Amino acid sequence: MADIFAYIEHNQGVVDDTALELLAAAKKIFPDAPVTAIVMGSGGDVDKVANEMTASYNAVWKVDNAAFSFPDAEAARKALVNILPGDCVLLLPHAHFGMDLSPGLSIKLDSVFLSDVVDSEGLDGNTLKVIRQEFSGQVSTHVHADISNGAVINVRPGVFQPDESKAGGGDVVDKSGDIGDVSVKRKYLETVQAEAGEVDITKSEVLVSVGRGVEEEDNIEMMFDLAEAMGADVSCSRPIVDAKWLEKARQVGTSGQTVKPKVYMALGISGSFQHMGGVKGNPFIIAINKNPKAPIFQMADVGVEANILEFVPELTEKIKEL
Amino acid sequence: MEILVCVKRVPDTAENEIEINSEGNDIERDDLVYSVNEWDNYAVEEAIQIVDKVGGSVTVATVGDEESEEVLRREMAMGAQNGLLLTDDAFEGADGKGIASILTAAVKKGNYDLILTGAQADDGAAEVGGMMAAMLDVPYASLVNTIEVQDGKLKIGREVEGGNQDMYEVEMPCVLSIQTGINEPRYVGIRGIRKVASVEIPEQGASDLGIDASNVGGDAAKVKRIDYFVPEMGEGAEMLEGSTEEIIEKLVEYLKAKGGLK
Image 1 (tube, rainbow over the protein chains, first blue to last red):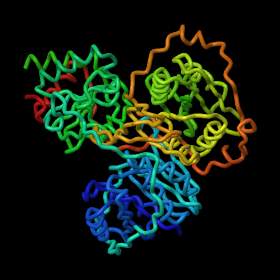
Image 2: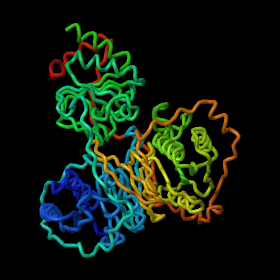
Image 3: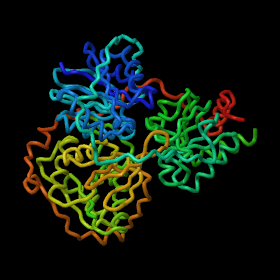
Image 4: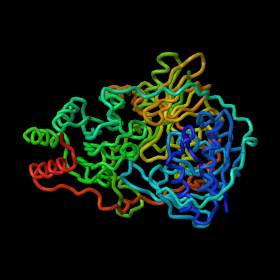
């Protein structure tokens, strides 16, 4: 049986939600195998996180090096190649860091890479059976991988229930001396904070959120009319910002803002996990979309199958009459 | 600067509803409209803009069959100077690592300073760029949303959580995967397509690339998509039915009850 590892993301000592989701994923795939947490960082933060993880994981490997004061995937990949057994299985969150690190790591370890895994149907000999999604979640696929040489598995954040059993009781092992040369040809300069927008949608109680279904820039105004009638703010999904129809500060999602409204009205939004990853606090979700198969209808409380460009003006009129 | 952009022909989700075929082993591909992967368009536009500023040329490459030639031609109509179709029966069934191996072999045949891919594809795993960088032993950055050429190096930004951006200085050659929104890809009209309609696009197979076909095709693939399916979901949303007027009435009641009207 291969050794199983989970990469723990943290932000200056604060452990990411995915830390215990990965443990749950590992236990679903390998029910009886011990799981080792890998914590990389610099200074006091790394000890804090490593000690916290001993409660849940069977062992914790810590790497303390100034190179990891910032989570740099290029340096982390070199270190991991030196400390990990070649045929191991490593789980990471499928997010900005894991997407940077993992495909290349699988090549360096000569193992397979499984991207954005949402579920597992377990192991059959050396064949790992997982479930992925394609076309923004419109369809799912069964994927089989030969993991006899190991695997790097990026697990979608938020799909596995965190394992809170605290059944680890492991010790911290310091691997800092084994990482070898971690110099890289990609030098971190700085993190540029997102610009504040004209509205702070993270504080909005009611959001009218606009997606690709709006079709044209001129139609955005229609959505503002509805928002004004409701007393709501306007947010949007990624394609609207890519098209430069609305400012970045209005984008909801993992690469945009995290919002916590009471009511979230998704207009012409398909409901990709990157978008819904930014909708927290269990709001009442209303979805209006002309595609009855849009994934948003699985997550919404109330749905209307309609073309927003025809439906929204009528809704706005009705609300104005109230 | 010599830039290679790796592109992919995919079903166009803006033009199609993606459905499972009757056997359940694939999506329904009859009548599907295909186009170039959305992220790849941004990568090609970025490459053209860089070359416009500092000189050089842009080559677009894809792994596929004859039908993939149309996406190369479309990207050449945008302004890429060269196309390269990597095609061989032996490439059939390649997994992500196989595709990355084929593209890497093509990179080694050329003399590129910069290799771009789209950050992901609708039917993909966001993996080929990172794999190529590891195979070539050059730096990689994913989700890139800004590129600036500075004294033989690149200053780039990566999109990270919360709309923030991590800035890096990267040595070349390198591989970057490009995020949507980095630029505004130019419109390609019928006229542009016609202009490049008769341009010869070279084809290369396994032997041209000097790779052992048995290492990259379906037999070598360790990651296999078995089928497509639509998962059993929970109940999902309560769908409001009736005339538009009735639906709006119900919706307004919900809005009132849940605090959606102020």
